[in-house]
Image (tube, rainbow, N blue to C red):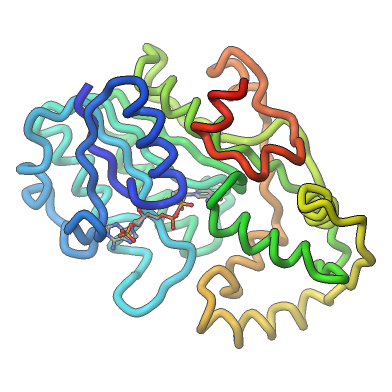
Length: 288
Ligand SMILES: NC(=O)c1ccc[n+]([C@@H]2O[C@H](COP(=O)([O-])OP(=O)(O)OC[C@H]3O[C@@H](n4cnc5c(N)ncnc54)[C@H](OP(=O)(O)O)[C@@H]3O)[C@@H](O)[C@H]2O)c1
C-alpha cells in the first residue's frame, strides 16, 4: 500500500513507519521535518497534490501544549479536517486518526477538545475511518514516558495529591499493532480507546519506572493539587508538557474498558514489564 504518514518524525510516527516499512508498504512522510507545516495546510486544496496515488492516510501529528506558532486549533482541528475532506475528494478511502484518550464527551482541555473536533469531522465523512484514542504511551523514545522516567529516578518521587490517579498505560508496540490492524480490518468506522490491560495509580506507575531503571522503591512526597497547579503555571511556559491543563488531565486519569481493543487485536495488550520500558515497537516485535 502507499501510505501518507503525517507526524512520521515523532515517537509514535517513527515506530509506525518502521513497522510499516518492514511489512513492505511505501510511505510518504509529512511533517515540518519533511517540509510540510500543518499550520499552513488548512484547506482541502492544500492537500490534494499530496494524495495522488495514496491508499491510506495515517495522522499522528500532535502537540501536548501550545508554544509560539504551534497552536491546537490549526494543528489538531483545521489541518486534519482539511486533510480528511481532501481524502474524500481524492478517493483515499482509509483514514487512521490518532486522537487521545479523553477526547470524548467528557473532554474539558483545549488539547482534547481540539482533537475531538477533528475526530467528529472524520466520523461525519463517508470514508473507512478509524479514530484511535491512546492512553499514555510508553516505550523507548517517548517524550512523556521520558519525563516520567526522570521524575521516577529522583531520590524521592513527587506525586500530585494522593497520587492515586488511575492510569492504563499502553506499550508503543500495541499502539503500532492496532494501527497495522486498521490497515487491513474490514471493521471500519470505529472509535477505539487504546489502553493497556492493567490499571495502575500514578504513584505505582512511577515506582514501576524506578523498578525498570534498577532502582529500589522510593519514598513519596505528596504535592497538594493547588501547589502543583501553581508550579505548572510557572513551568508550563518553558515545558509544554507541564502546562496546567496537562496536570488537570492527569488528575482526571487515563483509563477505559480494554475489551473493545482486545477484541479488535484478537489478544490482550501487553502486561507491564520492566523490559518493555526500553523497547520500541520494532524491538518488541522481534522479541515476541
Ligand atoms: N505519546 C503519548 O503518550 C500519546 C498519548 C495519547 C495520544 N498521543 C497522540 O499521538 C500523536 C503522536 O504523539 P507522539 O508522542 O508521537 O508525539 P511527538 O513525538 O511529539 O510527535 C509529534 C509529531 O507531530 C509533528 N508535528 C508537530 N507540529 C507539526 C506541524 N506544525 N506541522 C506538521 N507536523 C507537526 C512532529 O513533526 P515535526 O516536529 O517534524 O513537525 C512529529 O512528527 C499525537 O497526536 C499525540 O497527541 C500521544
